[in-house]
Length: 144
Image 1 (spheres, rainbow, N blue to C red):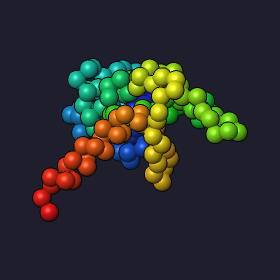
Image 2 (image 1 turned 60 degrees about the vertical axis):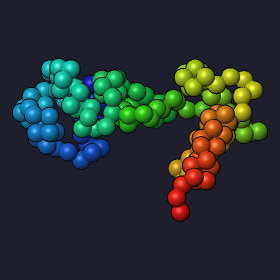
Image 3 (image 1 turned 180 degrees about the horizontal axis):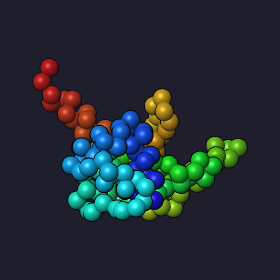
Image 4 (image 1 turned 180 degrees about the vertical axis):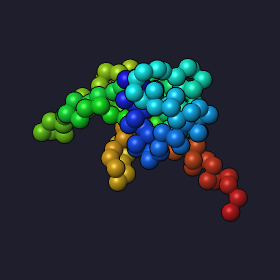
């Protein structure tokens, strides 16, 4: 798990083993042993690696897989990959239970659908409306 993530992250970011080793203050040989699975880093080194890659320590040491995709890289801090869903002919999807639990989503709750060029996001209407009210208040008192 850890060694797979180390190799994947290093390659995604375009670093050599030597560059990563230098960034966290160890030898290239010690780092190579982590990638091969011969040894594992201590918690302090895991923290340094997580900082270099902008992920959590948990993301560093756990491997995630998606159906139809396989092993995926750890998500950046504050980001999550909850799995995949299938949309039916009416455009309906089932939000994964872990997501509903994490965000306190319940049946009948209103959600705002947002998007950019990469995809869509669902935001509880109450949270969105509160944010918009704050933004409007700020705009009305902001100096011109």
